[in-house]
Length: 281
Image (cartoon, rainbow, N blue to C red; front, side, top):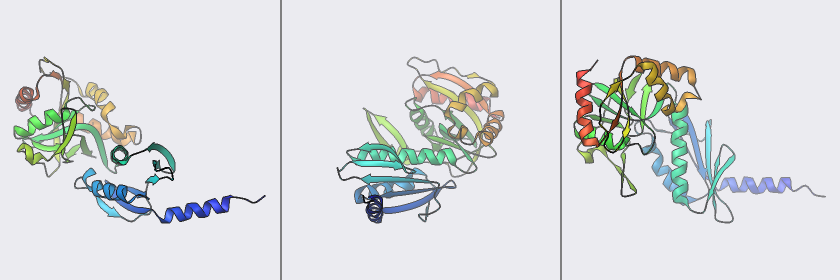
């Protein structure tokens, strides 16, 4: 009985020749992407630099830490394969592409060399960073936008990026502003604001979320209590816990840490900046 494996291997090798490939590096992490669909390739290649503003460079398709593949199969379904394992299947590319880009951004955030990524909004005020750790749909972008309109320098509405000394670095992606169930990517200049260009020391860590009728009163807490709350928003904590905790401790021990249930962002942002200036370190 003949062995079908050599024939199958040849088919696979021929199929792989049809793939278009791109490799890149961001924050010291090397990622490769490949696909046999021309439309998917154009869209992902166009979108990749915007995932990592100011920290993206092309790299050869080799020595990558992770390989993401989108395969259009004979049934015209799109398979997302991550490091050789099937992750998901979709009949269309729009949702798949968004999911793929999210996975890539999170992989870099998890494994960034010499950086700790927090899921947080971030601005700078009078030379000091303000970090607002929070999950999705908790009003980070709305509050960051309000602070930017009052003159704060924009750093990010998604990630606070800290170096080994606990300094905050810009991650100035367009703001993801939601309205009427839709999301629009909005450059900070459209809000009349400016993006930060240089790293700054962190002066304030704010733990807050929107609550209708919230008082907006700010209550200071200890670095230890702050650490317990910030950990759930810290992306590399499982991948590189020792370095991550070292950075978080440096950051939190030098900053004001406060909690609040806030009301409308426009009103609360004024209270926040006044509180920060009063307690400025």
